[in-house]
Structures are given as C-alpha cells and as structure tokens.
Image (cartoon, rainbow, N blue to C red; front, side):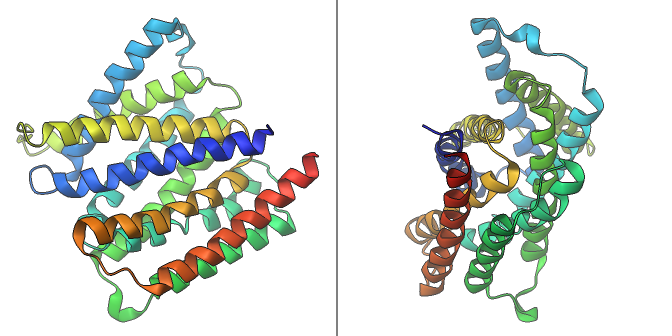
Length: 287
C-alpha cells in the first residue's frame, strides 16, 4: 500500500469525525456557546491524550522545542474552529462545508511559501476543479451573504493555516506531542474566552454525551489528519477531504430536513474528478 493511499484512508476517518462533530455542535448550540464547547472539548481531549501517552509510554515525546510554532498553530485552529461552530448553528451544514472547502485554495497558494512544496500543474488543476464544484454547490451571491456565510468562509483561511503549520510540525514533532499541545493550549484559550464574563455554563445530562462526542471526534479528526499529513503533502491530502460535502448534505437532509439539491451531487462529481486526478498523478509518480 502506497503512502498516498494510506493517507487517504486516514482522511476517511477524519471525514467521519468532522461530520459527527458538526451534528453534535449544532445540537449543543442551545445550551452552550462556541467558547464553552471548545473548552469542554479540549478538556476531554487532554485527558484522553495524556492517558493514551502514559499507557503506551510516549508522554516523554512531549517537548517545548517548537513551542512558538505550536502556539501559532493552535491559535489559528482555535479561531477557525470557533467560527466554524458558530456557522453550523445558523446556515445549512452543506453550505458550511462547501465554504470551508475553500481552504485548499489557500493551502495551494501558500504551501510553496510556508512549506516549500512545489505547486505542480496537476495539483493546481485538482484544486481548480474542486473549487468549481464548490461554486456549483454554494452558488454564492450577494443575497446569500450573512453572518453564517462570512464566518464559515473566514474559518477556511484559519484552517488552511492550521494545516500548513501542522505539516511543518510533523517534520520535527511526533503526533502525540502535536495533539498534547493542541488540547492543552486550546483548553487555556477556551477557559479565557468562555470565562471572560464570569459565567461558564455546565452541561446537563442531556448535553454531556454530545460534549464527549465532540471531544472524541475532534481528537480523532486531528489524529487522522495529522497522520495523513505525515504521509503525503498538504496539497495532496486536503482535496480528499472534499468527500465530506456530499456526506454532510445527506446528513443534513436526514436530520434537519435541509434541502438536498441536485447541485450538491453535480458539484461533488466535479470535486471527485479533481481528487481522482490528483491522486492518480501522485500515485503514478511514485510507481
């Protein structure tokens, strides 16, 4: 099995985790704000990461060698994740994911500067195809611009920065170290942001399972994403994540009666074509 194929399998796990997190985040929005969701998610994640590291003897891999880069990476992710959690509560899930998927454009544009990766013709073509598919799904126009659309689109920029900084960290740091600082730093950020007004809501018995689901799904998503990025370039991994779009469209229809339009599947087909072109090109180069 090639490294590219292994990375794609890790991304399937990330897709399932992100989709679960979107549904749980929407359900929690009536009892917790986005900062509180992030705080509890990070608290749960830190306990799991530390416990697993102790169990397998990898806690010693946690270090402060790239502490500045870890901080910048986690600030970018904390900002993007809060914007994303807000967006899933106010606009259709498929629209959130479609706007979020502008991240690959930012990755492809910035990767040569941040990561030193080459912008090949095939990678550029795959990103363009993916973006065309997103435009078909989202059909952006001025009448549709609102706070949810703006926050979803803005989260994409911060997620692109997170992806690139994660790729950079995988060159010198283990996955357990990256995940430890992810949860630890974002717990601190969450406590500060949620508690600035002196009022932090405590989840009740109905909300607690959703908080635990978000914590587990968020941690698993980052483990899968980080594992994928350690095996293949960011401009190869990110387009695979487009599969989340038709998946969450179906979820939104089944759970929230959100309209399932033909444009979603037309756009998804074009996105898949871009993914296949990119993966075929990368596999052929390594064979």
